[in-house]
Length: 334
Image 1 (cartoon, rainbow, N blue to C red):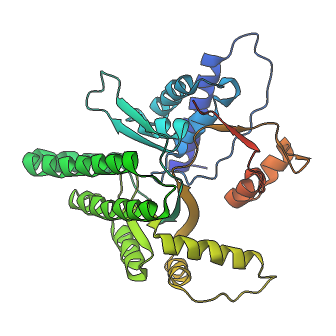
Image 2 (image 1 turned 180 degrees about the horizontal axis):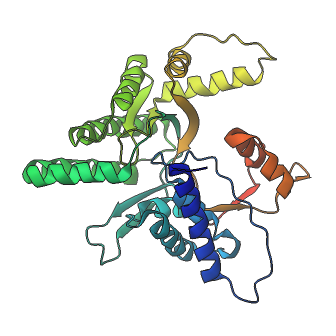
Image 3 (image 1 turned 90 degrees about the vertical axis):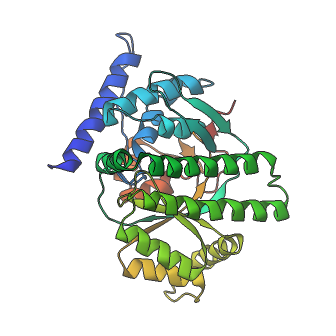
């Protein structure tokens, strides 16, 4: 094992060791730690932050702030100069209004606990990217055209404020208000992506993906993380979300049949597969740090061997998903 993968593994191991030594003591009982993740690495999805949050869960009850602070230490060890937004979202879940203008001062953070859990299509372009390179690219553009870049950044800030105001006043229990709010959020996601593209942080694969989603008419798409490749997220339109749930239900009862009905969403999925994109179905605005305790689902204990022998990300996800037990995972909620 060599190159970028080796560096990622070394950084993860170093962060774990540092946190273990910082939080443990000579009286700490011996333990065997096994760690796996179902989040794609290095794709702008906050995988390192979620790992750092996980590492603190044993002693974390009713201590979200403590988890968040130590997770930020893990991020510092892995990334050097992180903003702190990834670990804050991974800890608290839902959504976060986060602003950090001066790194010598704590960030301004507002947790949006009423943010609804919305169906999301997460697509990996399978295009490698460098966060440092993309950040440097924007920095160079800002030096050359400071007023223009500042205006773009101000517009992005306005988008965030608009979404925040919308969430604060929307009753998501009302179907009519919810549909209107989702459209508002989706349209601003598209505008946000356009602004990020104007800063030069998109990529042809990201633009191709956005084109395919727009042509299918199933939702609104924007790049994630620093851009330059990696992943993009698509917020599904309400009618597409219902269609996705229906298709998943049909697939679960297909009894081995390989054919599936045609629909805009299904056709998009086929197109993505043909062009080498990797698709994941997830949600936007879920819970933050949680623990599966005791590690028993449907009267079956998940032991270390089962955990380590689960095949790939899909196997781990299936193993710990709760298997339809909504009360299996316990979350820390203030």
